[in-house]
Amino acid sequence: MTTPYFPYSYMLLRDKFAETQLPPIEAFHDNLKDESLTQDDYDRAQETWSRYGMQNMRQYYDHYLMTDVLL
Image 1 (cartoon, rainbow, N blue to C red):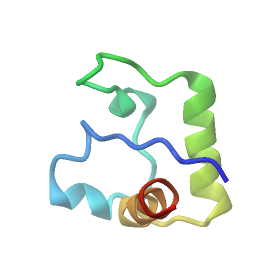
Image 2: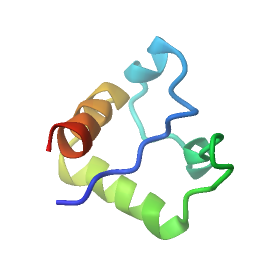
Image 3: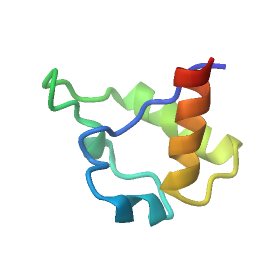
Image 4: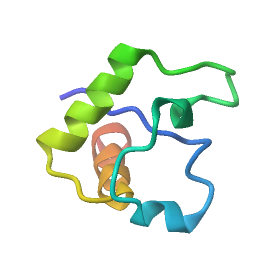
C-alpha cells in the first residue's frame, strides 16, 4: 500500500473535511516546497479515493494518517 497524497495547503479550514470529492489537482500544490503534484500522482490519489469508497475529505484524511503516520 502506498501513502496517498495529501493537500496540506488546501486543508486550512475544518469545513474542508465535509467536502464530498477530492479537490482539484491545483489544491495539492505544496506551498512550503513550491511544488505541484504530477498528474500521475493525482491519478493515484483519485484511485485511492475510489478504491476505498471515500465519501468525504475526513475519510481521505483518516486514511492518509493510517498509511503515512501510523504505519
